Length: 276
Ligand SMILES: Nc1ncnc2c1ncn2[C@@H]1O[C@H](COP(=O)(O)OP(=O)(O)OP(=O)(O)O)[C@@H](O)[C@H]1O
Image 1 (cartoon, rainbow, N blue to C red):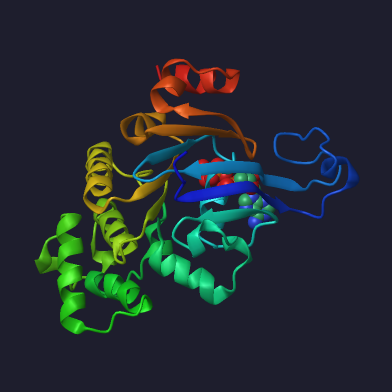
Image 2: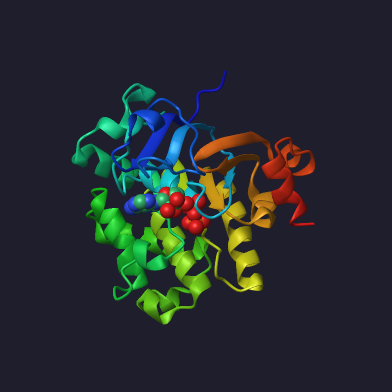
């Protein structure tokens, strides 16, 4: 069996104190306990991500997709569960129970994140080159010439002209901001790229260009990608395998063609048919 680059075991993120009813598996009203109103944003989620694949995560608004991605990038603490990275202590140490310093190491060396909202991933007033350099410096780079070369290489990879590298992202279009975010996330050659609704809100033609770029990047940087989208067209275009989430739980998973052409669960059937 191939070792996953990332493995998530029984991840749960809850908001609320819980009560005996929901702790013991009582039926929730979508993701919320009808008695104590605790929200089970992610509920016992298990995921493996394999080398070089694009794993799509799809589900309606509120199904827990962003919670899953953001908890992986340590944006907040999880309630329960464990996570393992092949490139961190040979996949033998739980990443969620590491110190802040170790979590920073993981974010600077092993994982890159691209948010739907570029303001979360970029400093809008810094130059674009400065945004990328910040990530290189965080990983210990100090050599100016080396950093300059790497910035040039990354901007080329995301097709941003070198002549614009001194401009801040706030001057750029939404699609260009996402490109800068992607180049920053790739700065230290992470094994894993987390993409959270990166094309939502962009014009259709710009969306297609960013999606094509993601496909190229997977090849060029040999990176494994977890991609969240509520849009099945995005999932169909990019994902090798797909996970369907509903009310904080994974309800179906498999090869993307299988999931989209022959969905088994009524919710997935409804999702697919709404696209036809
Ligand atoms: N801080 C919070 N306190 C309480 N509930 C929260 C909090 N953050 C998220 N939630 C709830 O967790 C659930 C999952 O939210 P999440 O943002 O992960 O969904 P999503 O699938 O990414 O939706 P969207 O596509 O709209 O972003 C939702 O019911 C949301 O209201």
